[in-house]
Image 1 (tube, protein in one colour):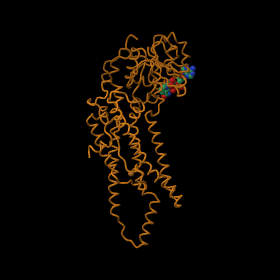
Image 2 (cartoon, rainbow, N blue to C red; image 1 turned 90 degrees about the vertical axis):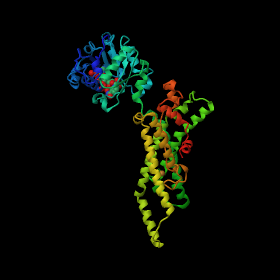
Image 3 (tube, rainbow, N blue to C red; image 1 turned 120 degrees about the vertical axis):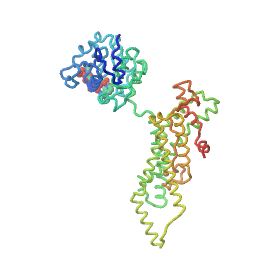
Image 4 (cartoon, rainbow, N blue to C red; image 1 turned 135 degrees about the horizontal axis):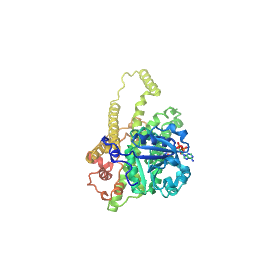
Length: 470
Ligand SMILES: NC(=O)C1=CN([C@@H]2O[C@H](COP(=O)(O)OP(=O)(O)OC[C@H]3O[C@@H](n4cnc5c(N)ncnc54)[C@H](OP(=O)(O)O)[C@@H]3O)[C@@H](O)[C@H]2O)C=CC1
Ligand SMILES: [Cu+2]
């Protein structure tokens, strides 16, 4: 471990590979499964010498790239300083016979526990491995990378590799190795973090669960409400059969209700936070947890609101395609002929629909702008002034377009939420999460940072924003 495993020129892959390495760095792999094979392929491709330790090298050798040497476990662990343990936790103890040969080496734990195992065990797999081999240094790494990504190269998948270990020197070696393989290593601290790192691949869209459930709950609620009002009530009171409206019309009436309520749930926590700050007389105190979580979910809630609005637009386009709509048109025409009317034109209705459609398109357009600029890759490309300009200005435009008092295309509803939509600021950083990340930034609205822009925006209620720019 005295000399660095990876020579400098491999790490600084700027094309200056003229200087040949004096010695090709050697890496060992225990196990010959899917992960081991992909890892060997990647390591060989990155200029490492690979030796694989298998219980049955004859059977598995043909599956590895020819540049990798496949041999018995005892032989494989002899010379490399870094050894990947590409096996499952339950087989770690079968390696105990190799303790003496492994002493002083770096063991890289790449394992991912299945969910039930992760819940069952108190500690992490990496800590378990460290307890079995007290004379080795264990580093947790690469578990978030799939065998497929390893083989295909980091271009097509996730690049970040969280790495943790109690030994800084060993950790640095693996950080350099990950970088040499084309990944972006992230130092996540000591081996105590391994449990968290092992939980990462188990997560499924963590920030979206509550907002998605919320949207679903709202959808069910408004769908039931619209069904009772538009379908059930006419059936019970007048015997009219309108059940054909269930798949399109009722859904289309429901979507803007959901979008509108979600939209207000994006604004509401900002207003509550502002009120709380005013009441406390300071912005240097933590918000309660529920409010902080709510503030942090604004982006997801906003994007779901945008999704509902976009679906509403699509459904609205489909309304005239329905067979029921064609029958209605024909029936109306026949009625007109029978009553001897030749020209039907209600000026007010015509104007109402023209303006409604135009504003609907405008609102959806500005809404899309907000949604797009809230995406991290695009938000990062904007400076602070551009970010707040787009977010505040398009929000105001959108709000004005959406709050125009024309009823929705789905006309049937008089419930306020069925008016067309506006959209909020979608930034997802909060004063508090900024304060956590960097205490010096806490509450500062002078700092040229998008978080600070958010600080200001928290205090802009929809009403304020509307009047300021009217
Ligand atoms: N596959 C993937 O995409 C990913 C896998 N991982 C992790 O990598 C590790 C290996 O996964 P993977 O390669 O998919 O699994 P496999 O089942 O394909 O391979 C496991 C390997 O363990 C070796 N082994 C050693 N001792 C035993 C034993 N007593 N019983 C059975 N096998 C033994 C075997 O090699 P041999 O017979 O040659 O000794 C076998 O090939 C796991 O911990 C997994 O969580 C992490 C991220 C992604
Ligand atoms: Cu509408």
